[in-house]
Image: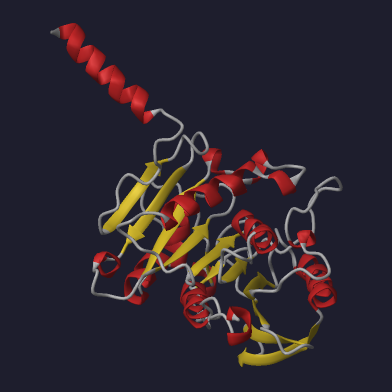
Length: 329
């Protein structure tokens, strides 16, 4: 009897380790935290939230948002700063916040980011999510966003899969390269003629990681590659934050850009989430990435916008366009 029980448990373990076993084993409504996905990438975990309305067959189909953290972070830390899972509950989106093995997406990619293992892993998870029968995801409402290392990945997704994602939000990570031998780490993967989807970009003026100088280089590159016009002010107080729009010469979708002067209460200062988390859970060892931080708020500073809310507005406003009559014919 003992040998039979052991054999039974061994069979279960072997089955769970099969390369074709699914990563998405729980499809019920609710928040599923740190679900292992070792068959796609050893050490990968994905936290995802499924709103009850996404399980209601009488309701309209839900969208799906992938929200990717920066270096030395986790998926739950990302969600604590963007609040995308809660916003997804309101607006009808399944939100996935993956956690990188060792909290680092880049180390599996450097220096050739054209063949990034991390990118392939998250795309594999998304492809599986789109085929979950219980979810019936609206494929015109699939979006990608990320902060810092996740922002670098966002640019690569703009290059690699503009067909899959309806729109993007790149928070920080706006650089052409960090090291001389880096190949297509971020926006440099775009080439003349590359499709331009709807993109909302953010960068802090006092960012000490992806610096303002880095952004100005990326801005010049994008204006040349996508034939964008000059920035036009559309919102902001002109002092602590601004929102600008870059119109296209051919009348296509505009790119929009958020900038701010706020700093967070940690060493990289403006490398932060406006309106994000400034109080971290006790004993969590989390970094307070929200800005303005406690020091600024003690002086009366308040965030002019919340990046999570702005990201959700962007996604809601930018699903995939419906095919034109000419395309259908």
